[in-house]
Length: 518
Image (tube, rainbow, N blue to C red):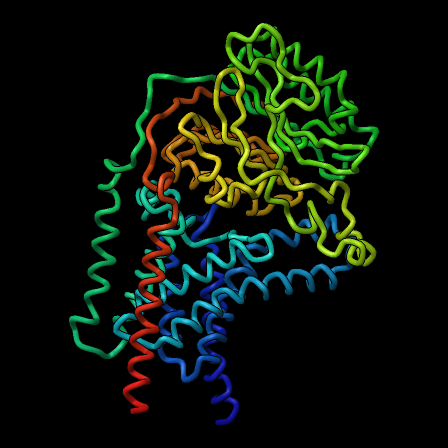
C-alpha cells in the first residue's frame, strides 16, 4: 500500500495538469471565463518551478497540453469521424496524434523556462518561452494557432490591449501574470515575491483606460450589408445533382434584399467550378448591377489545362458606385485566392502515398493551389475589403501584410458544416472578433451554416444569424478610420522583448556556469 500511495502521489501533478489544461477550454467561446487561464497556467508554473529535472518540467507542460487541446479542439473529431471514412479507433488515433503534436509546444515552453532556471525572473522567462512556443505552433507544418490564450480576452479582461499589442501580446501578459501568481508560493524575499503580481495587477487595472490610444475612430459613413447563410448539408455540397438547387437557393434568398450596398455569400457557396458556371455568374453579375450593388461569393476555380484549382472569392456586379456595367468576367483580377491552405482538407502532404490509405486523405476538393501571401484588397461597390477564407483569419500576420490605408472592412467566409453542433464554429467567430479589435475595422463573417455575424471595430458582435438554418442577415455597418498601433508594428516589439529576456537569461546562466567552472 505505501508503494501504491507513493505512485499515486507521483502521478498526481500530471493528473492535475491534464485537468487544468482541459478546464482552460472554458476560457474560450462559448463559455468565456476569461480569468481562468490565470489559474490554470499558474498551476503549470507552480509545478515547473518545483521540477527536479528538465524532463519532468517538459512532462508537466506536455500534460497541460494534453488536457488543453484534448478538450479544446475535440470538435475536430466531428469532421474526422463523420466525413473521414475511418473506423472509430482510427479517428481517435488521428485525434490522439494531433493532440500529442500540439501538446509539444507547452512542453517546449515549460522545458525552456525550467532550463534557464532564474527563479527571480520566472514570470518574464515563462512568458517569453510561452510566446516563442506559441509562435512556433503558428508556423510549423503551415501553423495551427487555434486556442491561443489571448483569444480568451476577446470580450473582457485585457481586450483593450488588442489594438496596441495584439492577441500575441495579450498571451504574453496572461502567461506573465499567471507566473506572477505562482511566484507567490515560492520562498524568496517579499519584494521579489510581490513585485511581479503588483505589475500584473497594474496592467489589468490600467487596460480599460487604454481605449483612448486605440488609434481608430468611427466615421459618419455607413453601409448596408446582406450576409446569406444557405445551410447546405456537408454531404450534399459537392453532389452533382445538388449544384443547381444550391445555386438557385442562394439567388432566391438574396433577391428580396438586393437593395443592400454589399452582398456576401460564404466559402464555395457556388458549387460549380467557375469556368462551368458562366451562365449563372453572368446572370448574377447583371442582377447585382441592376440593383446597384456588388456580390462577393466563394467559388472554386479550375484550370483544365494545368489541372490547378483555387479556393476563391470573386466580386460580381459593381466594382465602383459609378460603374455602368457589371465588372465580372472569368479571369478578372478582382478576386482573392486562398493562401493558407488547410492540411488534409485542402492539400495533402505526400498525397501519392497518403490518398491511398483512407478516405479522409482523399476528400472531394482537397488539392488546391496556394494563392499569393499578399494580394490586392477586393473592391466591391467602391468599398475596399480585406478578405480571409476559413481559418486564415487565425493568422494576424497575414491580415497585417494585406492591410492598406484604403482597407475599410475585414471579411471572412467559411464552411463550418464539417464540425456539426460543436464549439468549433463559436471559437472561430471569437478569433474573427479579435482581428476586428486588433486592426480597428468592422468585420463581416459569412458561413454556410453558422456562425454568420457582423462585428464592429471594437470586436463586439452587432448581429448574428441562428446556426443550422437558412438565414439572411442584414445590418448597417459603421466604417472607421485611423490605424491601430498593432496594425503598424505587429508583433515586432514583442519579439524584441522576448529576445532580450531569453538572451539575457542565457547570458546570466552562461556567466554563472563560467564562474563555477573557474
